[in-house]
Length: 333
Image (cartoon, rainbow, N blue to C red; front, side, top):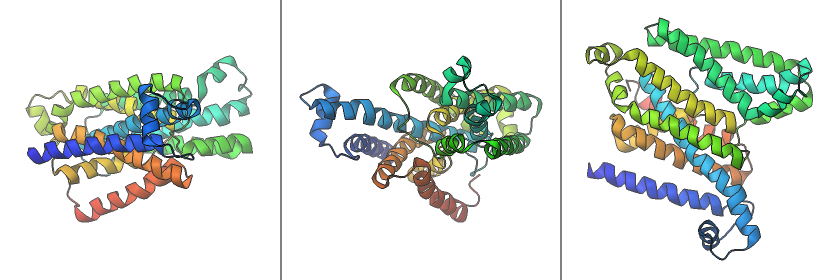
């Protein structure tokens, strides 16, 4: 217990330090005293304050919440499907979001409706969220009729593949400018989130995290299998619905505003398990959230330093973790 508490304290301090570092480091390095002055309203150069408050703070807060959201949803999916390689996008959420963006950026010009007032007001984030929610709504409807969770996993993957095929057709038919915009979105970005979008992202992600915390006890029961959970009085359908809802609020919203940020949701739950040496979700859920937030802040710092898309960094950091987990522990569940 003391070890777990100490790890949480150290991880919390590390996350706070990375958050401040993300505010200080960039194309122009800013001393920490100026960062602190800007955050607390102290004496600070106006230009420096604008850089911190209007640009870097938005990006750092986005990284903090996006990392926690993807890690929490990844843990939920891995436990629900009892599969160490399941992630937040396993149900086709990323594909659904991609379809929404593709229809917005690629399909609207092809159909000649890009100038329509509704299409213009929708935006990339809105189109992605609607696409992700639509796919998950279909999966949730199917899950009410099918009891076997592995069948739902396979259907989700197949549906995601079908959606990806439609996106590829749109890419093939689109002009160069629209195609470039879509490809850039697929690379992921934490810096495109505006202050008004953050007002939508934060409460939505917080709602998803609250649901994730609320299903901690059912997740512990699901570790022992759905049949055992039923004998213990767990309502499987209600639990699935809550987990799916949490996933679309977390992974769907992050994908909508930041693009499909890969490997955080897949790798971080394993990092939390190895770090805390625990299977209890009362420990794993907050541990995954903190680890995810810290790791995405690290990825953002590296991405800024190398001027690379965030997805390339998360993949380079996440893939080795997944490979090590698969090789060292082939019986996680």
